[in-house]
Image (cartoon, rainbow, N blue to C red; front, side, top):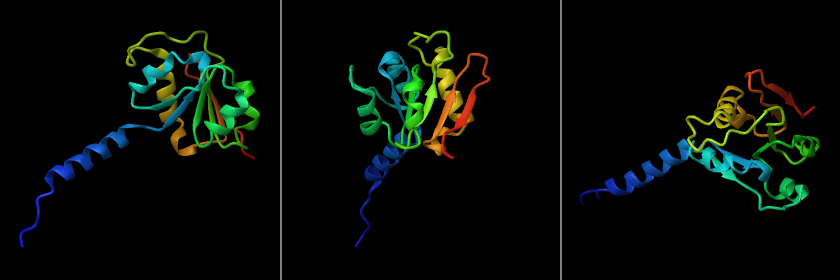
Length: 145
């Protein structure tokens, strides 16, 4: 009996795997900088934005475990990052958040994306805070003893 040709099924699987490989992980983008969400999505990063008004404690328990938070308010999240197993990319030291909708031109998104790669944050997963600075001299701190 001849073998069935599964070329179309193989193509579908390959396309699915390629899309998964392009996506570099989940970021939770704090609501006060949600303008970055769509620009980050264009760089193939999966982004979650909490509903407006969601309490920080609920964000920590429901959205952050095993994810990375991008925020301009890191002080409210830093102390519990290791307990709830999330990482933090802090934008506290940036003077402004770039509103540019093109990800190739958006300086804030480039800083985030480049820092994720340079510091291998997808592999670390949680228990850290990375404070980004415009001059590229970012400050990394492990939060796990």
